[in-house]
Image (cartoon, rainbow, N blue to C red):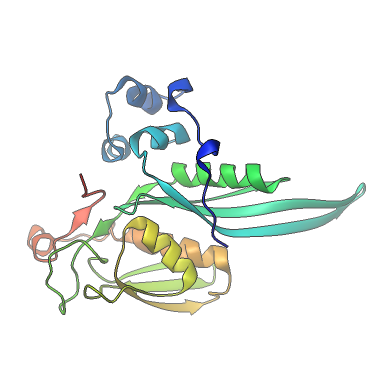
Amino acid sequence: MVGHRRDDDRRDPRDWVPKTELGRRVKTGAITSMSQALRTGLPLREPEIVDILVPNVEDDVIDVNMVQRMTDSGRRVRFRVTAVVGNRDGLVGIGQARGKEVGPTIRRAIDVAKLNLIEIRRGCGSWECGCRRPHTVPLEVKGKTGGAEIILKPSPQGVGLATGDVPKQVLRLAGIQDCWSFARGQTKTTINFAKATYDALKNTSVVRVTPQTSERLSIKEGPVVG
């Protein structure tokens, strides 16, 4: 299931009163980009920080699951929502929330995804390409959550996202335009499959590369537009 947050659901950052050190620095203008915020090492605990620093952030609802439970007072119904956010330019996050109503739970899941926002590396990692644009993963990376595992491999420009629908949502919002993928395990578990993809993207920034390799593969970390 895919959904987009409506404009009238968005908060007005001007009404925000920050409660954390990172939030105060953003509010006063001491920090002006998401890259700066993430590199401070301060915890990201307020979604308004993302609203201000990444005004073009988009969101998708990956999964909405109704959970029923019998209690002494009768049947109890709650919803579990998984959402992904990103700016299509090197920033992506995934989050999950539970609640009694679908609408508020979706909003909470999106906020949690914003708090899990990370920078990823992109590049031109395919030997078949050589366009020197950051359009794919820079090298092969693996991600695993629960019984779901995914391998992302660089592909030449024009291939598109050769992957399943769930990873495609995460990759697209992360700014990956071309990619080959290979999945193993319990890929029908939507949530774990999405989280495994997020884990693989996180690993693009964990792998150590030399300056020479970074130059050869045109590796860029985080946003590169603007």
